[in-house]
Image (tube, rainbow, N blue to C red):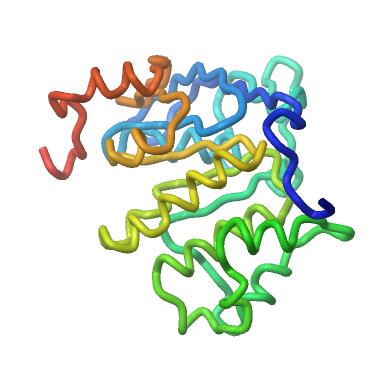
Length: 243
């Protein structure tokens, strides 16, 4: 069907490589991440460096050395002096704040940034159940609805990778539970690689296909969901402000 997402079987395996080193403030970043399609989670306490790694992928922070590749395209390579500007990296990002334009309707928010000839409008609205919201203004949306709109806008920008940086931190538990199933559908029904940053164990267990533990800027410990569940049973990793 025209406008629908490619199935997992139809899509080409997307490979993500992040091998970077650098320092930001007092935090030394040392990441060695290899991942494919699905959800790659970065998990750890607040201030561990998770969002900095995401910013490096998006081109918003430049490491001192390393390589970043997405789907066979080199975005950053210090040895070969490659650093693709952020606006050309085709990253779709969703943060804690949906950052919707308050003066534009949901439909106009979604159409903002769409590429010429973009396909998938109907598929995205169906995926995130937004058909009845497109005429509303952002001020009339609940927190969960606003995050779904932000997700849809990011997808419609035709991203190589979808970056989700603590996208549900500002939601109460009820709204979080409403949004999680949509993230699962996004994971299961599209071929867009997703990098998901969170300090919440339950979100990681529900969404992640692969987990990288991040502590003190180090992101090299790769775990399957089962290994992650076993490693975090005793709540060894907690938010620093909860310690």
